[in-house]
Image: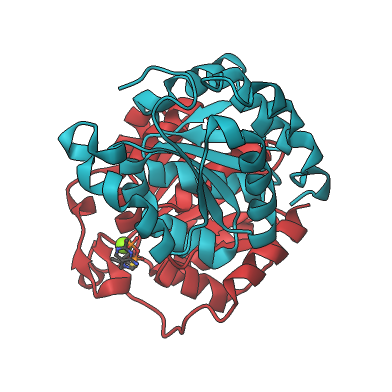
Length: 193
Length: 187
Ligand SMILES: Cc1ncc(C[n+]2csc(CCOP(=O)(O)OP(=O)(O)O)c2C)c(N)n1
Ligand SMILES: [Mg+2]
């Protein structure tokens, strides 16, 4: 799974493929670190909520939103380190079973944003954890074509869905998300209203 | 925030009849919050909150969380989706969710009512609550979370303070519950 092992796509390439498939009106919650910063660089939308702090909480924010807005398909773009930190939320999602919730985990098996320290995702199979927790759809993908196929499939089915995307450690040259957090809130709420 | 859901001063009068009684019934407590406009309740229970949580569960208003930081983040997502959220927790849970309150709610201006059970109040509680019981109010001051302690005799003012502060500041505000103020299982 490490970059030196070959064909695996980078996190940014996986994010790009996902952004191309996400419907324009779908709210997206993105975890802190590189996932948010790369998403912003690839294409900003008011329906993107960039979470810069509160590591581990992206899925819980998405879940709260999915419960409040059952008519909106809520998508969370998460990291393996983030998921391991907020692991209990997989249980909450599995128990509440929101049909309109898709949890995508960009799994590079490291804490990429803090210097590529190894995470336990190397040994802990997060897709199996999600399945045991009660997610309705669970898939694990590596190749871009599989990612596109499975994500499309999840968009069309009832959730909660969990898509584990194996990615490399490679990171883009990206700066901080240059938006003021209260402005992120305001435009997100406006776009959703 | 849907402006129709703005907390109002007038709405809180339903807490009126309980003022002066020995203890606030959990039904009246929940009703007062609903009257203000709160419509999303989550949290992690504490013995002091058992009556309130039971009322919320009976009324199907409560979404249980597994940790207080998760509860706070659920509230934040619900706020983004147009709800007016409240989170129940013990002050032990306040420690658990502090980073989320500061780096999510305060930073992004997501209002949220924290209903916090004051364990370790005046040192009369189990030893694990001692330090937080003593430090809680100065901790809240330090991290700039407005707070107020509910009492049976000032409940009306306490609830209108919640309604005002919550929306004006758009930050988490804490309503502290000492033992014996709202009826429940007492530790
Ligand atoms: C509570 C907390 N602990 C640690 C950090 C430092 N930190 C920021 S991002 C990050 C790594 C995130 O890892 P992952 O979710 O796997 O995303 P990746 O960067 O690998 O894509 C860490 C440890 C933080 N911001 N907050
Ligand atoms: Mg990672």
